[in-house]
Length: 194
Image (cartoon, rainbow, N blue to C red; front, side):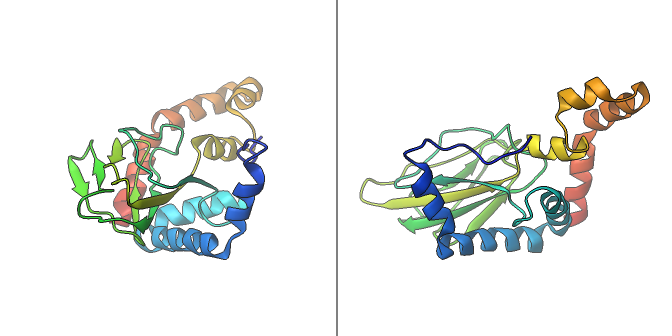
């Protein structure tokens, strides 16, 4: 069953204080509105999913990267593969020299100034950002949809294990075909947004 990400006991009050901050909530609204404006069909899909589960903004999860945040090359394979994750950049740094967003799979490098958001399918596009000079500050918030949450919703509010153990053979066959072709559904959603 879905639930909140668990934080270490000594971090939980601080994390909750950050999430309750009106400025942080404004950043979440900014990320939500960007997805709605740029990818309205994806936004509608995710908003419907969340209204059934968490009744919140379209992104039910976020990750905070604080201080001199930089990342190694990675994909966020736990995220919904075709969804555009939102990364909002903050801080004081020279965006022409540091904090550049590199999308390795696409062979593209982007300047990523503070106060802007990028939308990338982070589960299938390998990405990283360049290191920050020690005297600079670079923070980011990454908003995403955990793939497990989408599976739980699609399975009628149960896990894959429970669904496959308790469904009819015919429905199980349809479910396996749908899952095998889910990437086509995602590509179609993205194509319709362009």
